[in-house]
Image (cartoon, rainbow, N blue to C red; front, side):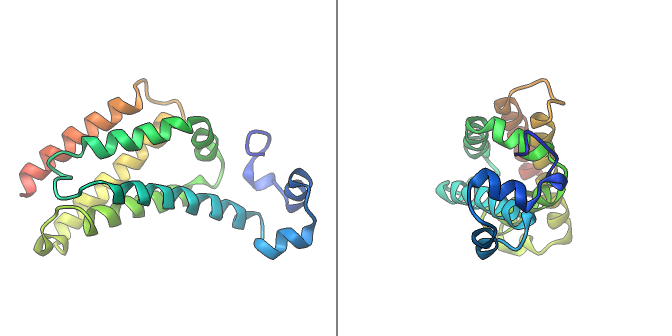
Amino acid sequence: MLREKDLSKITVTDIVKRADINRATFYAHYPDVRGVTEEIENEIIAKMLGMLKEFEFTDFFRNPAPLLLELSRSLEEDAEFYRILIKANGSEIFMEKLKKCFTDYMLNDSDIPEDMRHSKMVRLRVCYFAGGIVNLYKQWFRGDLDCSLNDIAMEVSKLLQLEARELF
C-alpha cells in the first residue's frame, strides 16, 4: 500500500479491504494503522539484532567490515521493500529506532572496554557513528548516493577502524 499512497493517507478500511479481513480482526491485533507500521519496524529491528548477535564482537572496531558487509547484503536482498519504507512519511521514527539499535549495540555488545563505555566522549562518538551509518543507508535507499551498499560498508569500516585507533 505504501507504493500506492502516503502512510498518513492509509486507513484501517484500506488495510482490511486489502487483507480481506473484518475490522474486528484488525482491531484485535492493532490499535490503529501506526500499530501495523510499528510491528513491521520491530520485525526489521529484531532481524537486525539477530544478525548483530551472530557475529563475534571482540574485534568489531578493529575489523567491522564482515558485519557491515553482511548488513549490506541483507539490505540489498529486500532493497525495494526498504526503499519504500524509508521514503514513506513518518519514517523518521523508524530511523531513530535504527540509530538506537546501533548505538546500543556499539555501547553494550562491542569491544569497547567497560571503563570507556560510560565516558561522555565515547558515547558522543558512538552516537555520531550510529547516526552516520543510518543516514548513509537512508541516503542510498533514497537514491542520493552513487555507490553500492558494499562501498558504504567498506568506507564506514575504514572510518570505524580509524576511530578505534584513536580511542584504544
